[in-house]
Image 1: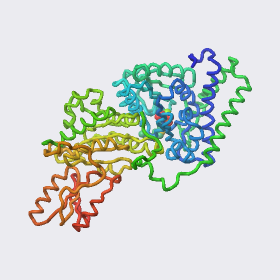
Image 2: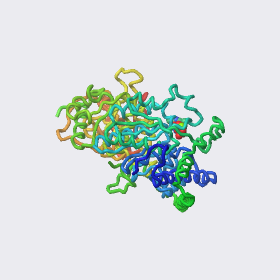
Image 3: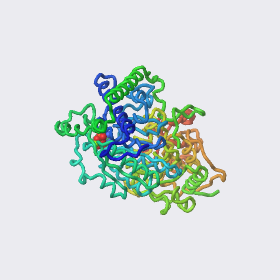
Amino acid sequence: MTAVRASQGPADADHASHLLRQMLRIRRLEEKCVELYSAARIRGFLHVYIGEEAVAAGVLEPLAAEDCVVATYREHGHALLRVSAGAILAEMYGRLEGCCRGRGGSMHLFDAATRFYGGNAIVAGGLPLAVGLALADKMSGRHRVTACFFGEGAVAEGEFHESLNLAALWQLPVLFCCENNLYAMGTALARSESQTDIALKAAGYEIPAWAVDGMDVFAVEEAARRAVDAVRSGGGPHFLELRTYRFRAHSMFDPELYREKAEVARWMERDPIRLLKDSMDAAGQLPAETWETLQADVDAEMAAGVEFAEAGTLEPVEELTRFVYSDRTPGADQAGRAAG
Amino acid sequence: MKTTYREALRAALRDALERDGRVFLMGEDVGRYGGGFAVSLGLLEEFGPERIRDTPLSESGFVGAGIGAALGGMRPVVEIMTVNFSLLALDQIVNNAATLLHMSGGQFNVPLVIRMTTGAGRQLGAQHSHSLEGWYAHIPGLRILTPATLADARGMLWTALEDPDPVLIFEHGSLYNVAGELADDAGPVDIGTAAIRRPGTGVTLITYGGTLPAVLEAADQLAGEGIDAEVIDLRTCGRSTTQPSLAASAGRTGQWWWTRAGAAAASRLR
Ligand SMILES: Cc1ncc(C[n+]2csc(CCOP(=O)(O)OP(=O)(O)O)c2C)c(N)n1
Ligand SMILES: [Mg+2]
């Protein structure tokens, strides 16, 4: 893959349009989700990532297929870079064809085949898990990276501190990715942390840490590539604080009483998709028909995903207690197995 | 061979570490210190610091790391010094270990073993004496083992490690020094059923874990009074177990009494 600099100069056109496509896929998937939610086609919790797409797209880009991803309940975007839109949407519909047979839903997307380890709805709950996945890799002599995403709200949790300390103490191959969108539900960072410089906290654990413009997909990708390379070559855990913003409400139940519309509007001027599109336009890398085709492709992908989900089936009631425990009958066909 | 409950647990750990390269022990003071209750004494020297892994005081962190390592193909044995401290890891135990298989639609089972000391009776004060295995037994997705005998101390660990799901082993603190005979070829035991520790016909006494020795003593006393008590050791707590011997025993004796450490008194069930 082409080495990409931060956004000062034009990047390789194919690579730029690949990143543009990835971000647009995430955006359109979630716009679809909101629409389907409003139409009561999908239920439960729904936390969208709109505005933060450059983070998932930029960080997952330099990861190898065998690298693990651990994410939060705001993980549709990360999942889409590994799992098909159809399997994700079917999961939200609670259908058997979903990536977790409809058991997980929006907040618990998992996929063993692509090493996607969720989908954790306990703030900071995924960090210790990521440390353990990395521990297994290190003990087995595998040169893999575990990328662990979490919001800046997680920084106040004990599990954040326990995990950073363990990972640094044991020099484990974890890439910690803090998605700092400035709010934890309605609590602004400055209202919850005595020290708001998050990268500094990580540095306090002797972990190399950078703050990155999370709206600039090239900046994210470059920082992630540097960190992933260092982690993979035995450099121990690394930490990225990705400064971003969520354009939509925290969840579908949030009246957004805690922030000014003007603040949201200001951040929307730095929409990561628009930033990239503008820079490609300026560099003559995105002819109008290419942009049209790209949008049409993505729209078609999401429409097909919805169709797949709509056609899905519900798990039979008799299977309700399956997967509380593993099937112990000899030779039983477990849906998937923990594997190295 | 003459041995103790503690030594039987250690023999089980040694056996598991020798049998399977994926097995490792991790917890607070399991290495240099030799284990808070000296169960792992000497194992660091035998197996080295990678596999006998001292952790910081981070119950949630290292239990979660155990879950992640299990997902990553290892077979971790996590030691939590006492059940009271496991409360700091409840999030990982309940929300992750017990729940991942269900949430992932069967994709991610968690072959993790967590060992911890439980129980009262050693004058350690309220915060080191709870018996919370009954609580844990209410969590779908967990298996709860309560070895009460030398054979179970020696044999339950390997079976637990072969289980595809998370298993919590509760070692009652008052049992560690119990000494007795253990067969030279003692090895893995079944973990699915209760055991009759003393057959009888007059009354059924049901217990588990650290209370077993006291209940056996009580049965001897009852024998002196002409009552022939049957003593049943549950061996496991909770829903993942079938307990056919209970009903059969009650059918024979006509009445059941149930007791455990931590319960205020014995309760008559029938
Ligand atoms: C341990 C825990 N406490 C509270 C909640 C409820 N909750 C869900 S999301 C959230 C805010 C988290 O904010 P942040 O980590 O910044 O992530 P973001 O939603 O901004 O992506 C809260 C408080 C939870 N899920 N888990
Ligand atoms: Mg946040």
